[in-house]
Length: 140
Image (cartoon, rainbow, N blue to C red; front, side):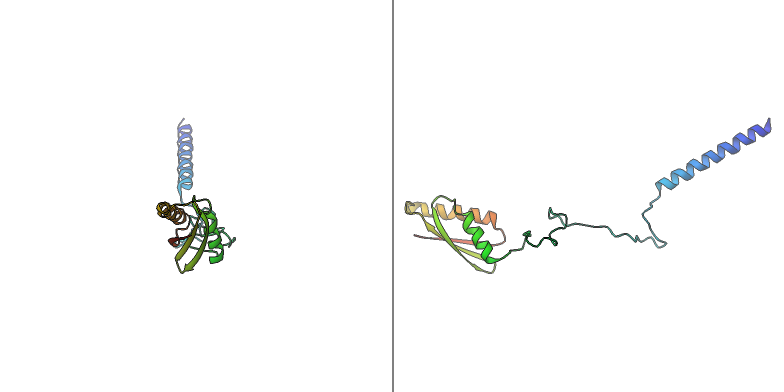
């Protein structure tokens, strides 16, 4: 009778030991650490650009502070203010981070509306081109 009890105790102790070892093995930090605790695997981080790091692979994707060229930016500026009421055309010149935009006004724009047209065009340009300091003037 005592042999059955000792066998049961040994079996219960062995089962408990195996369960404890299993729990400990599952809870350890197993990320291929070597003896000094540093990881041999380097994590990959992407910039918060919405392209998951592909901006270096595709150089035509404009970044936050990157202009493709002044020629391209001048064309985009002219296109963006083309639909502002009272604008017949425009010309753009650059001096570093300053963009000087001269608006050609429609013939039907009254003198009292000139300032409003300039403000609307400047607002559109400042929203769409935050990398430039926008200066807007008008000509007839």
